[in-house]
Image 1 (cartoon, rainbow, N blue to C red):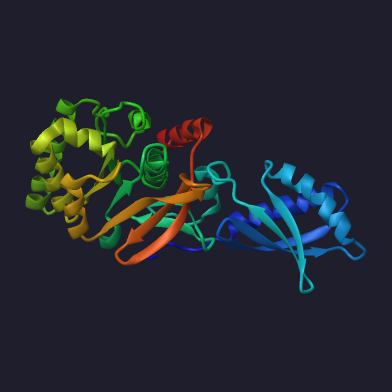
Image 2: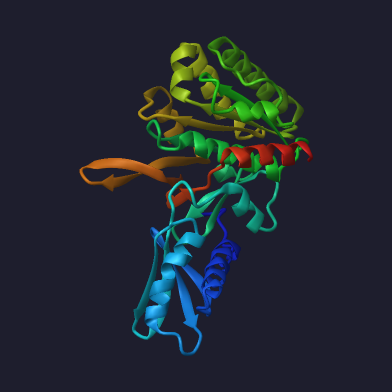
Length: 327
């Protein structure tokens, strides 16, 4: 996908952890590489002379413990020795360490996670083909977590002179972090009346920017639970949102929203509009049922990528706020 780039540092960090764990129990070996195979990462293993396969097999429990208890396997096939490490869905891939491992992040770039090919996925909201994003997922599938990952990424890669935020969250929970960020222009709208006022203000801002010819700083509207907003706002609210979506692309105004499909009142408009990233929760078969494990399919135009979304725990959110507040 355009906008993604490869950075080996994240996989190298885990390889170093494995190598250190082996050395701790006197099983010296060199660990390098790092090839992502759907749900596992395979590392090349070069054990010290004299080590037996049994020694390495017995060492896997210690390696697993050092990585937080994830499944680790030692494999010797066709004269090649490898270690395979399972992804720990929803626990292994944290946003702040991933961002720390990536050099040269630019303003208006958001880090969202790791693609199945081992490449971190970045979305550059200054590009015409990725100016906005809509996240479609059922309840509990991680859409709010993805929304926060995009929000925090932009707050950490961009100064408030470069981007401003506005939020609508009628649940009043998922976007609370916005109120603590210096980029945010006003309190998060948590009722339909305030949401309508914000949408109307953005529509007026679009007209002012068109008249003046200025489209900076960027303005990002974050919406969680778009379904609830459109039910509460009615036809007028739907019309205002469509105006924001249609007019924002050429005026530096972006929309990042999460919703539960289907949403017929808005989805047809999204299908026709170029430049939107569409992120859809990826179903995981478990027995006879279907669950969701934090992976999303990201689609830009006709190109799709399966991505493990990076997440933030409570400590990470606090850390991100402090960093953003300190500029």
